Image (tube, rainbow, N blue to C red):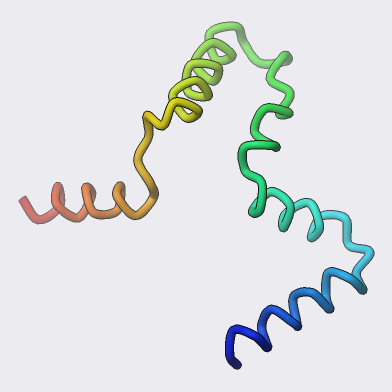
Length: 80
């Protein structure tokens, strides 16, 4: 199946579904920055809230590594 056919199938499934979780999941993939701030952390311990907020600031400022970069680091650690 080529990329055009895949896009058409995805559009068709999204247009015909009533599966709210599927729609939310796809939206999160398309807009990861929009959803991360709406996670309710108020019921967590204060120290954990602080750590999460610091991590969010790091993320927004670009201070993170990608999953692929982390996999490479782990591979290096395991072969050193």
